Image (cartoon, rainbow, N blue to C red):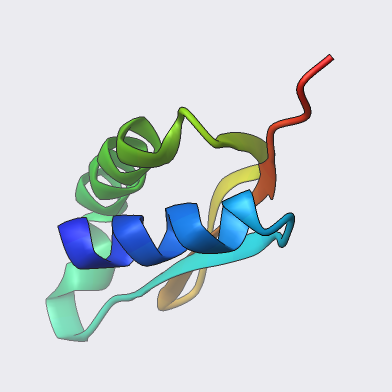
Length: 73
């Protein structure tokens, strides 16, 4: 997950938005709370450069979260 966080930080520093997604397979879809924990852990890794544009949401077998770059004011 550290590799993905590093790439995400690079995109956010360039001013781009990032879509974080998890695809559940088989019985994993019944445990959305574990996916939410993974999303929150990832958010903690990139929180220096990111703000949550859309919070994590599970739609069927997929969970999405949209991150936007922080604006320094």
